[in-house]
Image 1: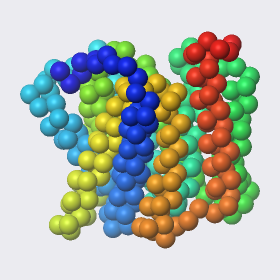
Image 2: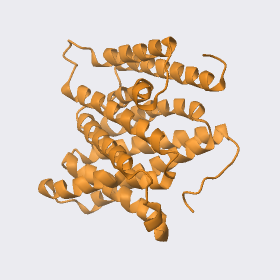
Image 3: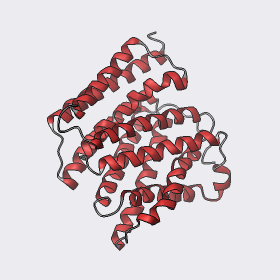
Image 4: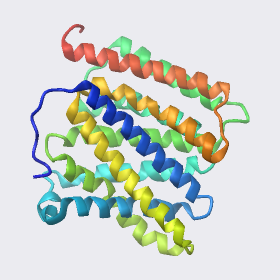
Length: 296
C-alpha cells in the first residue's frame, strides 16, 4: 500500500538530496505562479495549483483512492488543509508584487514560528537559548521589512502572515503524522484549496491561451512533486538533518527571480536573510542536541 510504513535505516545524504529537490520544485511552483499572475487573476492561478495537485494525487492513489482518503482525524486534516490554502493565498498575493527572493526570505520565518507554536500546541519546552535564536530571527525579518521606511509594503506584511499560517500547517502536520499515512495527508493538502477556488474562480475567470494551460497544469504538478519529495526527505533521514537544507530555496529564488523577472536581492534582504537563516540553523542545532540527550 502507498501508506504502508517502510522501516529502513537513515540515509542522510539521500534525505538531503530529497530536500534539495523539494525546494527546487517549490520555487519552480512559485516562479510559475508569479509568471502566470502577470496575465491571469490570482484566484485562477491558485485554483490551478490546488486542482491539478489533487488530480495528480488521485491518479497516484489509483484504485486505492477510497481507502487512502479515509482519515483517522478528518477535522484536523481539513484544518491543516485550510492553513495550506491560506498560506498559498497570502503568499501568492504578496509574491505578485514583491521580488521572489524577498518573499522567500520572509517565509524563512516559518520554522522559527513553529518553534514558538510548539509550546502551546504541541506541549514542547523551549529553552532560553532557543528563545534568543527566535528573537534574532525576527530581528532579521525587521531588517528585510525596515519599519518606518518607504520599503515597508503591505505585501511584505501579507507574506509575513503567510509564514505564520504555514507554521500552523507544519504544526498540524506533526500532529497528524502518527494518525494518517503520508499519501493521505498529501491528498488532504489540496482539498480545501481545490474546493474553495473551484467555486470562486469562475467569477474571475480569464480565457486561457492554449500554451498557458500547460503552465497551469505544471503548477499543480510542481506542487504535488514538491510535497512528495518532502515526504521522502523526512522518511529517509531525521528532520534535524534535512530541515536546514530548506534554506536552499533562497538560491533557487534568487536564480529564478533574476532569469525570469530581472530581480536581484538588495543588501538589506541579504543581511536579513543571513540573520534569519543563522537563527534557524541554530534552533535546528539545539533541537537536535536536545533530542540526542546531550543538553537540557
